[in-house]
Image 1 (cartoon, rainbow, N blue to C red):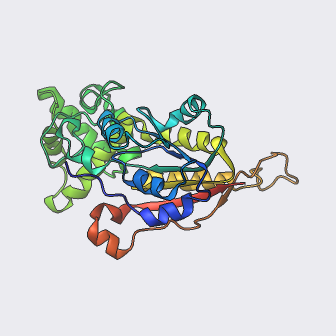
Image 2 (cartoon, rainbow, N blue to C red; image 1 turned 120 degrees about the horizontal axis):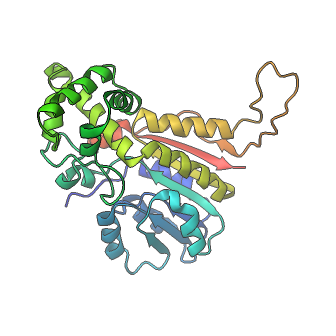
Amino acid sequence: MSLHVPVLLNESLNFLITNKSGNYFDGTIGYGGHTSEILKLLNNDATLIATDKDVKAYEYCKEKFENESRLRLFNTDFTDIKRVSMIEFVNVYDGIFADLGVSSVQLDDKKLGFTYREDAPLDLRMNKSQGESAAYVVNNYQEEHLTDILKSYGELRQARRLAGKIVEARRKHKISTTFQLREIVETIVPEYKSFKTLSQVFQAFRIYVNKEIDRLKEFLEKSIESLKIGGRIVIISYHSLEDRVVKDFFKYENLSCVCPPEAPICTCNKEVRLKILTRKPIIATQEEIAANRRARSAKLRVAERI
């Protein structure tokens, strides 16, 4: 198995670790890339709680870290941060970390159908026991709803046209595989544009079926409530939608007033909860991108609880 290579590793850890004997949370343990390095920097009395909803990733790390007493693993979503913290009697964290997006291992797993480069069942769910598959969505949703998904989560200019083509195709036969969806996309875009468009289409349906944006917003809110004063939240995102959510959340929590500009005095009683430590996102160096192509789209943002 070709394991996922951690992105922006040194930059992440330099911001995250402020107390080597503290409590830390890794919401996306994946195959343990960042987690292993976090543990190397922590003292023996530190605690690292980690979650991942991907059963394969959880089982892999359970075996990999079976002798690691500082680590507590949970096969659940990072939005469960408060519940797992209560189980482990952790009140607040010194640092909270999340590496968003799809891992290399998940992309290589044909059963998940995350990539248009391999013919596989059109599923796209991180956890097959939860929610509707992408196949169900493309075969059952109204054209208007499909248009909204493609426009909102794929940022596709030709969203309406593609939604119409999907509806037209499913009248003839059920759309069950990644290649069937790919063929529909390729009827409306020239070959030189198909790579970008296919990426946007598969991203749109993946984000939708996994509720990625809603889950991210929930996680950010719960995280800020779980940080100690001076604790830090470190987030790596891989596409503009995720990055915008993180950026806007940090910006809002850094504001002291959200009253309308025309208001004579402040009446909102808004609390400033975060200090932004990265005014602009940190991106990978050319050397890292050359060694790990996935790093090219990564953006790191950090904020501190105040």
